[in-house]
Amino acid sequence: MDTSVCSRPLNCAQAWIAGIVRKGDRVVDATAGNGHDTLFLAHLVGEEGSVDVFDIQQEALTATEKRLREAGCLYRGVHFHAESHARMREFVAPGIRAAMFNLGYLPGGDKSVVTCMEDTLPALEATRDLLEPGGVLTVVCYPGHEGGDTEASCVSEWMKTLDPHEWRVAELSHWNAPGKAPFLLAGFRLR
Ligand SMILES: C[S@@+](CC[C@H](N)C(=O)[O-])C[C@H]1O[C@@H](n2cnc3c(N)ncnc32)[C@H](O)[C@@H]1O
Image (cartoon, rainbow, N blue to C red; front, side, top):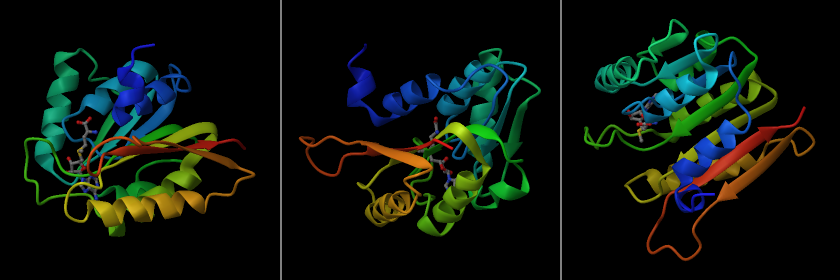
């Protein structure tokens, strides 16, 4: 195994999801950003699956669409939503296999536009209800930017509220990293 899987929360999130998502599955990318995760998910689910992608910045969705087109993965099943993920329930039917959240700001974009707990928490609640047994929810938290610490703590606390009979919650964090390093939280739905 490549050590970057363990050293980078994002890579670890993708590795865990890759072990669970199959061709034809329905999945969600809650934060499109520059489209790296959307492309990863589109590859996994293929033309017969679907990816619902959310971002409040059109710039992010445009970049994501371009990335998929250039990779030949702009499938019919990829649905772009220029909406907050807080409204996910309105656009996504129950029975999804995975949802990825990569919090924070758009790399290379406006750093004042960040995810916030007022939207992140309702989106996590929606994901909890939409995810099918056997599915997975990943959240990469960035406590390093202003407000990121509070959001990361809220997400951590929320994860602890998941019913232990139905969910396993796992974390990848760097105990010897300097400063406030990003970390990964994942909820695996058992039943
Ligand atoms: C770190 S980036 C995501 C990176 C992305 N997953 C990738 O692979 O490139 C975070 C994104 O979350 C978006 N965002 C912020 N608040 C949001 C909200 N309420 N709903 C959906 N997206 C949001 C930002 O616009 C930004 O593009």
